[in-house]
Image (cartoon, rainbow, N blue to C red; front, side, top):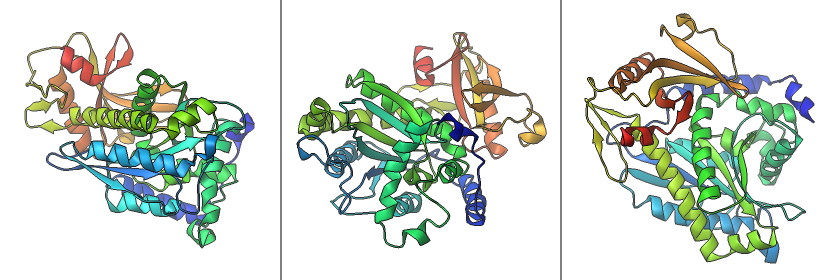
Length: 378
């Protein structure tokens, strides 16, 4: 079914109006925190109430496992300074996908994390993390379709989701056009979470993937959907159904969100200093005369599936933009320097031009590396 990639995207008049609204909203809510402002994380326990989600080994229900994990993740995050947690549900109640997005948008959240469990007729196993995107094949589309099918349980779903058909590949592809602004940040978070599942929890790594999940489409901030594991697998279902298993997943998700938060704070300018919110709470002082020769720094100003000419008129007057193709998308960078103070100035410049989500990335030997690690080592 790779031919799905070549479907012509047909977006109704309603979708076009929504697209215009969403794009204008994206530039108002940039997902980056300001100084002395709470970082708001919305935790979404999948399914609930009349919608049990998937039912697995020993009758474990997805809605129950997801809720227990969400509540524990929230409890851990609430102990962190400057992090505020909002829940889409804290009890066993049914909430529509559109309403979940409204909760996140009303909270003006910086992050949306939806937690689920997987299922399969075989003994498939492993964890995977999803960001919104065009499904690359039939398998990815079927996963999205299964999660989106909860729409049909909602009252007035034909009105609430007018123009969207959860069984239509064209509708699912259309969703991705509306949230491309946050795709890179969503994938960054998904990668951090997935790394924790595979290294810390020793779960089978099913990777970071993209598909058209409605619950992710409804939000105006970086958003991911976690499939913690297969409750239909005897061993994994038992693990996820246990208090110990839920606690381990909660801790891993908490660590991933915290790492993402710290990565963002590395890109938050505070006067002439860069605050590194690491476990040691160190501060990297102004380094105008010091060069970090071990790494090169760039400012990522945009990313997306469109191939743009790197002319200044395409980037609000910014000159020297570099375009790099990564998979099926393109990343656009400003600057290339080993002087961290210089890259801070370029980040300020990009933000002053309207690129509010512009962030600093580090490269070593041509490969992207963890920015916090580079600063701590330097």
